[in-house]
Length: 82
Image 1: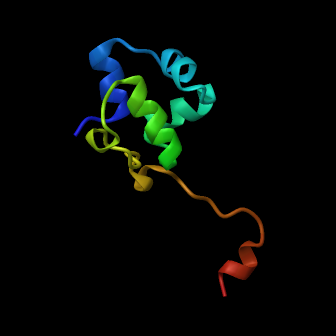
Image 2: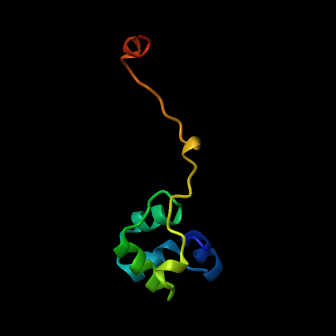
């Protein structure tokens, strides 16, 4: 099942094109395409319509591996050592 990023690559559609067609904020469309944001049902509908595809034919979940995100604890170190 193709992701939004894959569909863009295959069709030559840009993030700007999708944002314009769907009337969604550019940053939101970019986050969805990069797999950083799982779109709402309304966002899915709009994007699927922009590609003339059923919503069910597009993969919508996060694609970023959370293990690649580094988390740090700042301050209060003495409380974490207990």
